[in-house]
Length: 81
Image 1 (cartoon, one colour):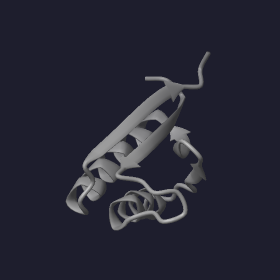
Image 2: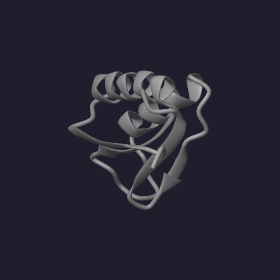
Image 3: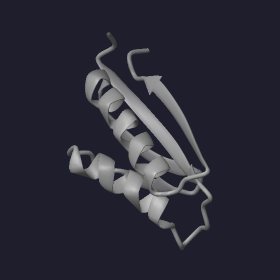
Image 4: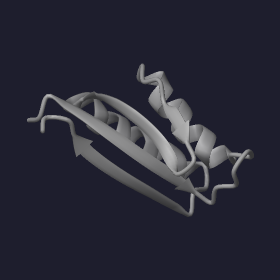
């Protein structure tokens, strides 16, 4: 398995400056796992070991959908080359 990964996720519906409970739930889910999510204009990014990022992706998906997300887009990239 790759050494490290970066995951970027966008939870919808999303209104800039006013994240709904489904967005906050996803961010809190990854924060609870020790990540420091960085909110950008097109998504939120986390990075870490591949194993930890995969666990975080499942957690954020569960949290966002449970809190009412209509769509969650996730992109995962390895930083091994």
